[in-house]
Image (cartoon, rainbow, N blue to C red):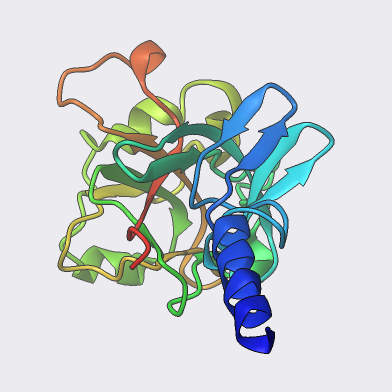
Length: 203
């Protein structure tokens, strides 16, 4: 009898673990993403805050989730705001975006990152800091105006770089934004602003 109870408990636990979470507002939360300890896989934790999904970085900063593509195991988060008249990203105090390397999320290779208000040391890097850099277009509109005239660069986040961080810091670059799947001749009004994260499927 005890053996039967144990088996049933294990089966119930497994069924619960594979249960998708309810919608957050109008947004579906596909498995394995989890907004609660009773659904999804806890390693894939995201947050439902007043009907909006958020992703928490390793430093505890929350980024709004803009979209989820469960078939591709990817989601897109909103880049941090660049504070008006300061050219500081809102996550500057946290050092920019940092993912927990022990969790199954990483930054995909489809992100074009633009850095602003950089120190001269960045000119020693292979990044594009020329007058034709994409960042110059961003400086001309909206929140990018606060960074106009600063040293800025862009780069494609490729597999040779760390896939768990976009750094922002005093003495380096104090602000950044990001565009997903940026095409060479794509006009700014068509840019898909966001940071694409991908997750490893559960074992």
